[in-house]
Amino acid sequence: MNKFNVNTAGRIDKILAQELDVSRNQVEKLVKDGLVSVNGKSVTKTSFKVIEGDEVVYEFKEAQKRAPVEIDFDVEILYEDDYLLVVNKPSGLVVHPAPSVKEPTLVDWLVKKGISLSTISGEERHGIVHRIDKETTGALVIAKDNKVHEMLSEQLQDKSMGRYYLALIDHFLKEDVIVDKPIGRNPRNRLKMDVVPQGKPAKTAFTKLLISEHDVELIAAKLFTGRTHQIRVHLSTLGRHILGDDLYGFKSKRDKIPRVYLHAYLLYLTHPITGEKMEFTAPLFDDMKLYLSKYFNQSDIDEKIDPLTLGSRFTDL
Image: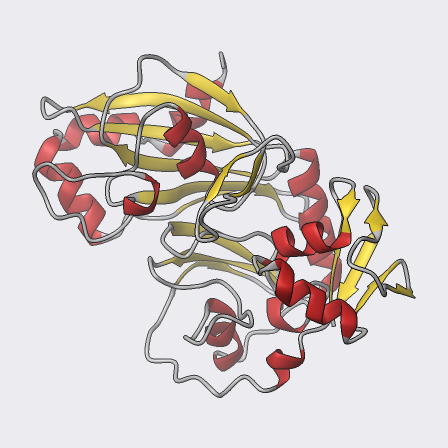
């Protein structure tokens, strides 16, 4: 069984489709099969209305039939203790299984490693407190038990836990800026998210770091919410695109970019058990480091992405 709490009121089919990243038809089948309940009561109509705070429980029959997957990769562990661990997720790795996901995921790797994981988010999302897009790299925290999971989730809600991202974009920003626009599924392309009136609240701050003579800019982004493709969507509203992000409009003029150059660089939180304020820096992967060194001076890079000062760049936003 899987569950989540509703953030925005609306129809159950729309809420589930957004939360699970599946089609309305798939949600309709779940409801017809009696696999969805709200606050302990079975839902029989896709038009059922939910409100903020409602607990939605659902089950995927397909998940029980998921074929075994071969794990032929490893993931860097940045920190681990008895309660949590922080990993540096590589590009191309999906965080958790879903009906449409056939390849191995981060959760599959964690299970194979024998790491104890929380179960509060359901069978397919063991340990997962927050997600990172498949194409994005960087720091991700994993909870080892349900108490720790709940406490970290509370930190996400009250903003005492957060992330700073680094991105390379195709045209420089005019100025530091905050984008506060709701995000939902693109009605014309289910692979994309978009700014839509009935979307979930989404807020991102962007700050300029370095500009190259080739019009490539290194920027940092701070998330105030955690929507799918949030940074990519909000940048596209500014007419800017992350290098390699063909889905949201990037078109290369010089280099072949193998992937989206977006990296969750710095993660901060309060340890749920010890109360210690902690920060974790996820090293850039070699391909992004190489691209940076091609267009920027290394000493300038080191100065601008110094973990000790990066957060202060958002103080005036």
